[in-house]
Amino acid sequence: MRPVFILIAIAFIGGIGFTERYCAAEDTFPFHAGEKLTLQAKWGFIPAGEAVLEVRPVENLNGVKSRHFVMSSKTYPFIDFFYKVRDRIDSYVDLGMTHSVFYKKQKRGRSKKGLGRVYPCPLKRGHSD
Image (cartoon, rainbow, N blue to C red; front, side, top):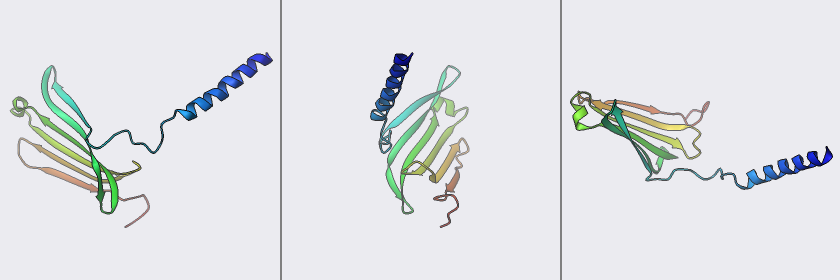
């Protein structure tokens, strides 16, 4: 019984040491400026449009260094005849990815009227500028 306990203890301690050595560093960011993810939207089996998620370079927004993400979506010309979509969302978050700094949403469609919403976000909860 005692050799089994020692073997389990060694395996457990060795496992902890293994995970600590090979964990991802917290300071690294998994996305880099210029990366894009393009998705195709379908209406049933018919290709209807595209959505693109893009990582932009770090920007200084109101004195806060921020990561900039853009999501845009649009329908293909054939689908525009039925239901036109031209949307764009800009999101700015702090470098630590802990809170939103700024959010802007633009929706356009067949009516050609832009519906824009801007949400300036506070830097931290409980703090005022």
